[in-house]
Amino acid sequence: MEPTINIIEKSGVYKLRVSAPGFKKRDFRVAVEDRSLIISAEHNVEKKEENENYVRKEFFANSFSRSFRLPDNVTLDRIKATYKDGLLNITINKTNAEEQEIKDIKIR
Image (tube, rainbow, N blue to C red; front, side):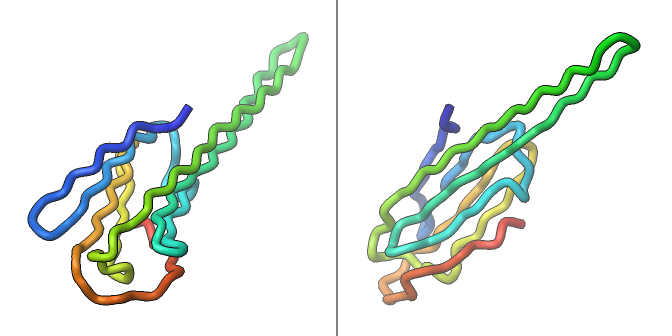
């Protein structure tokens, strides 16, 4: 199941809010490739239950990937991402300058 994403445009910035509870910051990858913003995450969990008569192990995996074509009026090297309490926030500043085509974004 893909997370819900809200996109807000206001006063010189685009703001994306990705609702992704259950993930950890290290599960995400946010990057720009060929003027597309790519948001992906993968989370694997192993649950082990031991009892006197049995051992039960379960593996859970959850992943998603979304991409958005960026308009020409954004600054690629000033994209910021933060993750807290199940919400990934990405801020993209607007500009008219040409920028590089591939960039990984550090999540804070």
